[in-house]
Length: 423
Image (cartoon, rainbow, N blue to C red; front, side, top):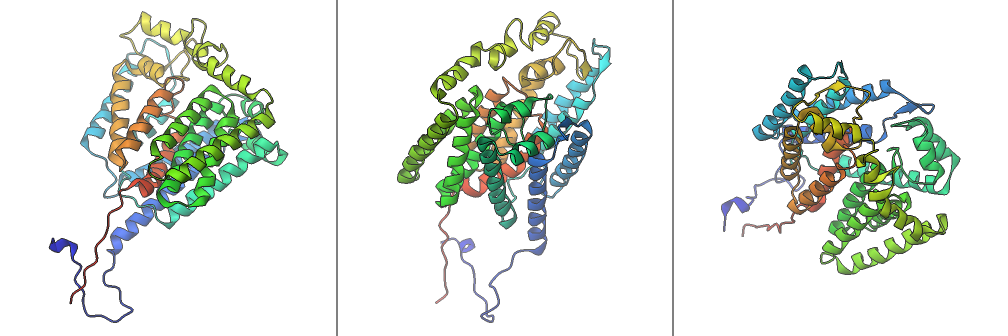
C-alpha cells in the first residue's frame, strides 16, 4: 500500500477540516475560471451591429477585450502550453509577415493580423489545469437556457427575438441574418446557418457528455434541443453535423445504453416532427441540402471551388504564383474567406496551414483529458475548414477555452478514492 494514498488524521476539533487547499492555488483557479467564462460570454454574445448596421468598431472592441483576457490566461503559472506550440506559432507569424514584406500586391489589410494574432495566443494557452467549478457550471447552464430560448423564439417567429438578433447580431453581409430568421433558422448570434451549425454541434457535444457522465435530465433535454435545432437549420453543414452527432451517440451507447436509446428516439422524433411542421416537404429540402454540398452554385463546395466560384480567383492566383504568397496583402480580385485552407495557402504558402493546424492539434490533445474527444474535435474542425476559416474566427477563439474546461469536467476518468482510518 502506498503511503501517498493514506491521509493521516490529526487531532482537531470536529469543526476543523482535516486539510485545506493552498489559498494561492485556489485563488488562481477561481480567477482562471472567471477569465475563461468572461472570454466565452464575450465570444458568444458581444454584439456585431447597431440597429442592424454591421459595426467594425464593435469588432475592434471585442478583439481588444479578448486579447487582454487571453493574455491573462497565458500568463498564469500553468497557462503556457510549451515550447513546441510557441515554435509553431512563431513560424506561422514569421511566414505571414515575411510574405507581407515581399507581397506582389500593392495594398495591405492588416486587420487580418489581429485575428491571426489572437489565434496564436490561443494556441499557446494551457487550460487543462482549470477546474470547472461553480462559476463555469452555472454559466454553462445559463448559456444553454439562453441559447435554446433564442432558438425557440426564432423557430416560433417571435418578433421580440428576431428583431433582437437582426438589430444586434447582423454579420458578414447586410441582410443575411434577416434572411435566416425569416426562414425560421435558429442561427442565434452567429449569423450564418453554417457557422451556427458548428457551434450548435459543440454545445450538443458538451451537453450530451454532461448527461452521459452525470445522468442529469436537464442536460438530456439540452442535448435534444441542440439536435432539433441542427435539424431546423436545414443546411448541408447542419445535416452533416447532425449525422455526426447521432454517430457520437451511437459510439457512446455502451456507457448509458437505455438513456441513450431514449435520447436517439426522442431527439430524432421531435426534430422530424418540428421540421415537418415548419416545412411540409422537409425530406425533399433535406435531400436538396445534402445534394447542394457539391452541386449548389449559391452555397456548398461548388459555390466556392467551381470555375465560377468565390475562390476561383484565389485558386488561379495560387496555381499561377505558387511561390508568391501575399501575407496580409490585399486585392479586390481575391476573396479572403470561406476556406481556411485556401486563405492560409494564399497568405503563407502550404507551410502556413501545416504549422497552424499542427499547433491546433497540439492545443487540443494537450488541453483535453479525453483523447477520443480531442481526435473527434480535430477531425470536425479540419473538415469544417474546407468551407470556412473557423480557426481564426473571433467567436471560436474566445469560446474554445471555456468549452474545453467544460468537456474536461465530464470526460475525466473517475478514480475510486480509498479512505483509510487509523485504528
